[in-house]
Length: 130
Image 1 (cartoon, one colour):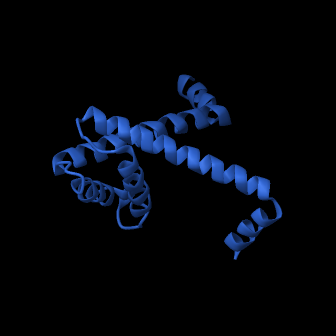
Image 2 (cartoon, rainbow, N blue to C red):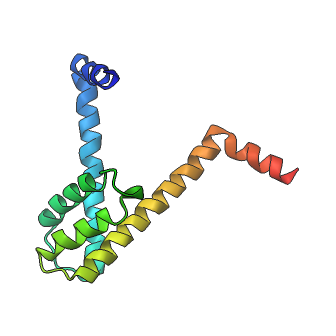
């Protein structure tokens, strides 16, 4: 029921809903474009529109609580879906792992920034130096 209450809050504030949807669409567009650049760098000839739906499907599929961080599920989805467009399985696997590497690097950077902005990081460093 807490989820229902939180979603109901959007009905009272359409502007907030619009902002949230805009952020979600921009985020998904950026993820798709980064996937497209990675695919092009691998030499995969896949249309951006095709990659847009593949990225959206893979984003949903890897959320299934089947494996840790979606590993294996994401790779399998990329391989199967990209093969529909003539991309070899090895290239699909490499693309998936490259995308995971980018996600991991972003998460590590965000985690480090959060530590320092929250004040925990500097305290840990001062204790380690003492």
